[in-house]
Image 1 (cartoon, helix red, strand yellow):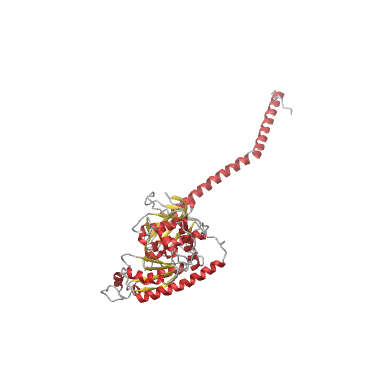
Image 2 (cartoon, rainbow, N blue to C red):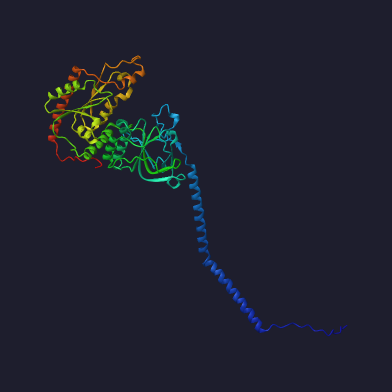
Length: 465
């Protein structure tokens, strides 16, 4: 059966050639644009990406370092300069001054602390407080240079920090505190400090005596600048670019090293005072360095006559009588440079003994009561004589003196005997002086012969000169 035609026909629209061309052009351009962008990503993006990463990394590192420095600053711990836990034995071990620190010490050399150093792990010494009456209110700490405590002031140059258990007015005690710095100075290329910081039992001290100032000025090239920190607020720390700390005086030094340090001070003092560095004449100089008041001779005229009489018996002997309190520092240096035998009561004036030439002699005198009650301190000049290369020829102790109301071995008697005056024993003094003079005369003659056999080309200049 044949179906009749519906009379409806299907019509398909035709796309013109111009539209096809336009579509082709647009597709091509789009494809090229995509390819160009892909190529750009391969050539331009990596450098931009690396730069961004480096900036981010640097910024993160800087933030980390800043945070680390902040933590290091917060971790700086200040401790009391005077550790009261050791108040019953302040001079033992590390001492109660900066008790947490250990000294650097090579056999026979001076003991010291250095900041910064390998021992301090590169950290600087910082101090806080300038209390002059309570050492436990002054503090110390160590800090890295990049992370100093908040509000800290960094002080440039070398600083010497001295600890003295006694005082800086007495020339013996003050020299003991300064002496190890001379040894360090000699051992380290003659490096000199910009300033000194002085402590006594942890308390800041603002000055020392003129005698020491002059001798240290001669030794180091200028008088010590004693730092008083009057430009610093109480709670603001001061940190030192380089610091040397001494706590044990000459402790640990060999006799040879001590003699070398005394030689340096003596030589520099003579140059400063415009004196010849060496005496070549066989003249014997005998000096009576007298005291007034405490531990002076009761009858000094009689004592002087005894030594003057014995000096006249020896050819070339010349007696000089002087009082240290009437002499300038250079007067004392000159007097000691002419002295071969020093006759003097026990006292601070005997500190000048190292200004004599090596092998010179010391004759020392004590009031009643010292042998039993004065302790080891009564032997300091005997020890110093050995350390400076001198000859301590013994001591005379007066058996008579003021009566003590307590038993002789009672410690309270020392307050009676300490400043007692000294009598004399003509027979003993005569024989003693005669023996010392005879020995020195023989030694002088030997030295004169020895010098004639030696070349005159030896240098008279000072070390660190």
